[in-house]
Each structure stands twice: as structure tokens, then as C-alpha cells.
Image 1 (cartoon, rainbow, N blue to C red):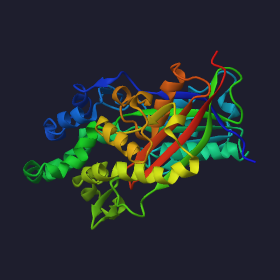
Image 2: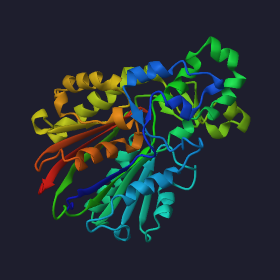
Image 3: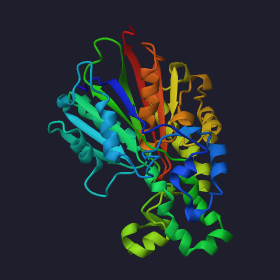
Image 4: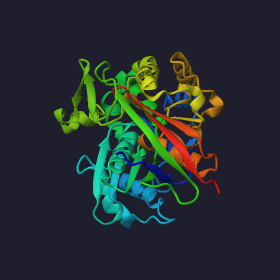
Length: 385
């Protein structure tokens, strides 16, 4: 028998004061000492007004690691009968870990210092927050754990600093000046990504007072059998496949910005809704008997306001036209925090007094890495007092 699982507490950690659009380049730096040609265009399209960075404005250096940021979000779950020493299972996820090895989650565990427990890392890009949540959910649902925490985090800003791109700029300055499209796939992401962490507490019982979110189902689908890589780091695309960082020497890695995050924007725009919305929901909707009338809140993660209308069209194309007045997102104020995004969206909705017992939530997280998608259904339970 599957044990019902409830999200009882949600926490988020957003470092430092918000950074507005005019402050971004000063914080991240100018590549080659020149203002970005892409910045204003990208910001106009993505609709993000402010975001957070771990970079200290006074020193230009990060004030905390990804593991520390994650640990701070998890500490925020404590209280009302839960302490870290009760934790049976910790699952942490990120696309921007502090190191290649060991796994991110054990570094988070080390920062927390709670007693020994099961620890697991899930990897990926935006979707790995959902895979972490599914691991934690299944641990409690199977009876292996009574209390689990899932965390998603990103520290993208340190990867986006100008110093990470200067070697390539200096080695290819003429080529990049005459063909700026070569650099666009890297530069535009500097104005898209930001830092943050979010965490959820999962238990085998709802809160004694107040609201909880019962996890009804969480479906994850990959379309990598049909689609090539679209977003990647630590590799370059060669002959329609990725050539990993270890096949380059140190000089090549620097001059080609191999470690930089890159994205094929054309491939993204043409396929992200088709696969992560339409194809995914065609498989999920019959199995889950999903209907618009049964959805009170729709919580989508998307990287840019540019995708809001295409997402609405995609939902309509599969007969799930959720009215926009039921949508809840905080992209414009919290930024695109990748693996942390769904936790940060849930935190604001859950802790902001918006929910009522009996309401149903549909969460959506796409990933362009090689086109994957997650949908999660939650039901609000408990006393609102």
C-alpha cells in the first residue's frame, strides 16, 4: 500500500538584495570591457524585472556557495515540530554544483550537520528539482522514510561573470565582432539566469493545524529519443552530438568557453512547447483524467515571459485551456532560478495565504536540456485557521 505524502513546510532563500536590470552588468562584469549587445533585447523579451545573485556587491565575489545556499533554505523548514535531527532522507538538486565530485547533496548534508541519513543528488537542469522531489516523495510513499526533504538550488551568477568569457573574447575578437551570433548562445543566458534555493518538507501525515499539500501524482517524461541536446555546459556541439569538456585541454576549454552554459535558441523556440507541453500532456491527461475544471491553480516554470502566450496556446491545443487568472508565477520578481524555481513559486503561493482547503494545483516544469517535462498534481488539505 502506498502511504499518502504531504508537503507540510516550504522555504526559500534568495541571496542579497534584488538586482534590477540596470545593475546587472555592473554585478556580472563586461566581457572584453564592452557592454553586451544582447542585454537590452533579452531583458525586453524575458520580462524579468529583478533577480538575486550570491555575488557580494561590495567585493564582486560570491558570499556563499551553492551548498551553503541550499542549506540555508533547508534550515528555513525547521519549526512547528520539525527539526533537522528528525530527517530520514535528504535529496538535493542543482545544475550548478560547486564541484564535479562529490555529489551536491552530501555537501549540503555537510553544511547542515544533521545526523546521518539517506542522501541523494539528482542532476539535470530545471527538471532536476522535480526529480529530487519525486525521489523524496517515493521514499516516504514506500514507507522507507517518514520525513524527507527535497531541495532545488542554483548559483548561476558565478558562471555568468565576465571573467569566464574573457579568454574566448580575446582569442576570437575579430570573429566575434564580425559575427556576433557566434557569441549570442552564451551571452544571452547571462541575462536570463539567477540564484536561489527552495526546499520542501515531506511527511507521512498532514500538519496538525494549518494547510498541507497532498502529492497526488508526479509524472516525468524525456523526449531525448526524439530530440538533440539544446542546453548544455561543459561541452560543445560537434556533428550533432556533444563533445565533453574532458576531451579538451585546459587552454582549449578557456579559449572556447567550453564550461559556459549554452543554448540553441532556435531549437528551443520551435520545440519547447510542442514536446514539453503538448506531447507530454497527450500522454498524461488520459492516464490522470486531467480536466480544466479540476485545476484551481496552474504553477508553470518558464524561463521568459516570451513563452507565456505559446504555453497558453499549447495547453489549448490539447484541450486544457487553463485561464490565465488561475496561473501563478513569480518569474518577474524572483528571476529564473532553474531547479529551484518550482520550490520558490510554491513557497510564495503556500506561505502567502492564497490557498484554500480542497483546491487543486497543477505544476509544470520543462527542461530544454534534451527536452524533458514534469507535471505534478497537488491537493490542498487541512484547516485554514
